[in-house]
Amino acid sequence: MTEPTSKDLLRQISQDQKTNAKQFFEYAQTMSNFMNKQSELNSKWDNYLESNKATNQEGAVEKLDRVDKNLTSLEQRINVKIAYFTGGFAVAMTIGKWVIAKTLT
Image (cartoon, helix red, strand yellow):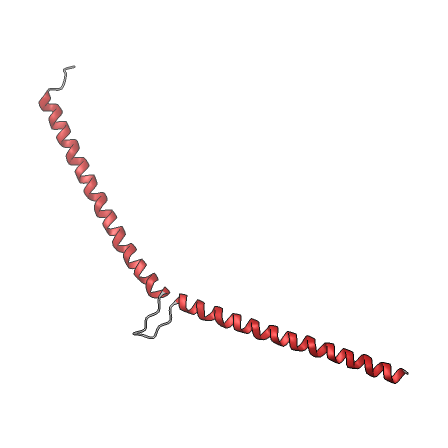
């Protein structure tokens, strides 16, 4: 078996570099395609999440904020009604006890 000559080694290195360059180009092309698709997806998410004043479209973030405020307001109104009901019930019980006490004596 003979040793490869310098010319053979250079030819092999050149061939390997061409193969590596082709693989790198294909990888860069694949990555570019992926980034373009990802950009389209990100744009769709932005359109869904953010409001668009030109089309009067409410975004998900704004909707969530509005729903949260409405829920907080509803919770406060329910708490006020519970307080009124509890106070009214306490007054009714007191009056009821007084009426029963007066009718039994």
